[in-house]
Length: 184
Image (cartoon, rainbow, N blue to C red; front, side, top):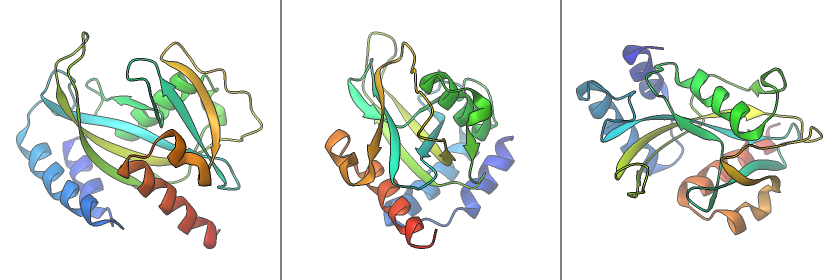
């Protein structure tokens, strides 16, 4: 996926929430104008994430991120890779410890689009993320060993996700999953 493919992915996205429409417009401007948008050294750059659900769509897989001491979905920096789907899948395998062959991309269309600021840390200055999120399915009967980036990785019932992460963007993904379950 190159810059033009990323722009098409964003352009083709049909957001269900108004803030995502604003994110899509802003992301399009940034991707068009920021030459290093796939490089984490850029003050605002692309990340790829996966909203991981079980086959029944009753649980989401969240990790307790060691660096930020918060619960998040798997994901990470593009680090020069313009194929954001590949980034999301690679990060999911790395952060969950699950064999990539056991990770199923439900659709290569965007599931969610978020833009957020990341605070200054010892490792990196404050910066912004254009986070492109894809829907991924993993069998919740598989062991989830995690890795060094997380304290813990857990399957969380959808109804309890807000107790672990009550950010608006996580709320959106839970709501989209609930909506999907009605038609599943």
